[in-house]
Image 1 (cartoon, protein in one colour):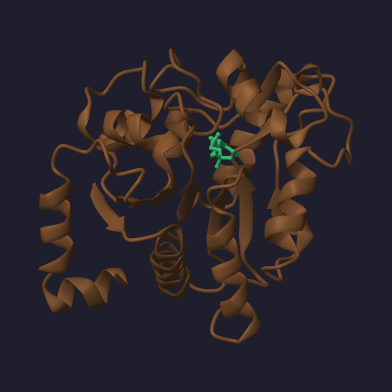
Image 2 (cartoon, rainbow, N blue to C red; image 1 turned 180 degrees about the vertical axis):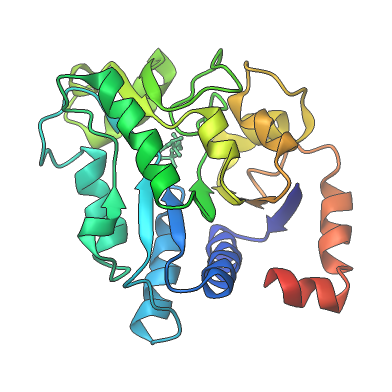
Length: 265
Ligand code: F6R
């Protein structure tokens, strides 16, 4: 796991954009992205969109799989993740909507929709780079504390904390769905690369638990300690509770040039 401590949220986005763009270029036109919703990756998506706009990145043949979707929101609801991904990823990144996927949270067969989503990811050749945020309770995707570290796409019940965190996107807490379909931790771990971004003091406990705590279902993000290619981009506020913060800074500042070239960082 590589931890990159950035001076500001802007730098988090710049460095994460460089990393994701490098992977896209290495993989080629058919790269498969895993995309999180929420606030954390928005500036990263804007960074990628800027590269698409200036012609240095082409995602017109790429595919994407969203991490999760609310259960029970009607198709086309402005806060359904299908709509959000279309607005924040598909359109600005110039992607083909036919190749951008979200779990079908409106299905009458939720178990079947979960299975179909896993199969679609496999059929696309797996995810090359999974972009993640982290919940204040340590969730990734909507894998809430207590999630199996080997879980695959399935229905989950959102915790009160997550519903409160997400109430800002709805008119009231009552409108936030109680259930979701989410890629499992095992699904996320199968991605070939993981790029997680976190900003602000509200994420400091979760980041410390993810990076330096025990690998435990109580902090689902901690499973990333077992991933071979996970990069965690944090600003100073989100890094505030990392015991080894100075070591991560030293490591990054003293990275051998060849390694910096290879990783795009
Ligand atoms: C969203 C998702 C969640 C968010 C997390 C952080 O698809 O999977 O894990 O990444 O809840 O949300 P923000 O970025 O809004 O703080």
